[in-house]
Image (cartoon, rainbow, N blue to C red; front, side, top):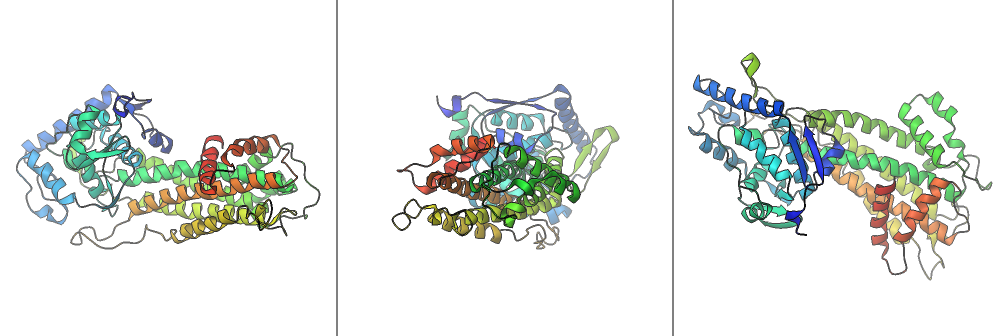
Length: 495
């Protein structure tokens, strides 16, 4: 069945809480249903904008120019003013955002506009609803936003795609936007009044990128816990390092929960009796690393969820109070800080996985398994190449932990004299989350290989189930690189 004919597989209702996991559902067609009260709020706010204009009130971006040119009048006609917005912002560079990221962005933008504080016309909101019900995705370049005054450049390109100008994706196929709209059964969006500014003047790209990173990183904490349990099972370690008394004394709730999860996954575990009293930190302190990661992600979840469900626009309209409020909700500092924290967290989880892999291939520490987990050392080299690639990946992740959230450079004729660079922080976090998957996939393949070449199998039921799920990822004709990616997929599905 052609992509354009595939019916939406997910239904979302507004108002409801938009979560990082909900963003992932927007990768494919979704049905979004706005309740009557929300539609009425959008219409009421748009009507109030018209009343303000009839009274001659000055409203940023509607009666004025943009940024430091606010002291000059804008275009007289609403349609022309919309073009005025988009023309000077269609400046993005770099690779396209992947269609799932672009679609998650517009779902986030919809959630903000549907709250009825932005002054856009109801058809603008309906256009986003209709688009999300198909496999259409706008072409949005990665670079151009400084994370302040909204993610202006990438969102401007998105709106051009919805107008049928430039390019777009239908499913995974890139094509002229007009053709993509036609094949998706969509009409080009028509903008007037404040529609264009309302569609671009928010940090929805930042929030979506951070939300998608967060959803993946939560799975990675679970994967890191399961792999640690499997490592203990393969090596025959004493499980003392998970004793509940240790974590009651420590006092960190998330760390105690990770240790509890490890204990549960090690139910049925039989130690080999040949390991030292205390394991290296890659095992003994794994609950502390995983717990600290969970704590950081808990904070990030609160920040990102608040942002996904807030209104990052300017100005905002409050008809019930006769207030037009000009401010700076489009300044994405909160998510910028949280995204940088996610990048650091991902890098330390990657360090843990790489060091656990190193422990596993070393015959001096792995209980006598062959070096590099080779079946016939020298005639084959086991997972030697996998560790080399893992080292490359982990160093790339460490280099990416330079914070973006304080890289402020004054711009826009000093109108934007301090900026948060949240968009770059969010996309770095998303890349970190995706690279971490490969580190975990590498460790998973090595654990499977350790059982294959050794004489010991784990005895805990949870470890056996994970090992069985990983077994099909490795075969004589399958390159190690493919095995690593498939193992990462297995971890996403099972952990």
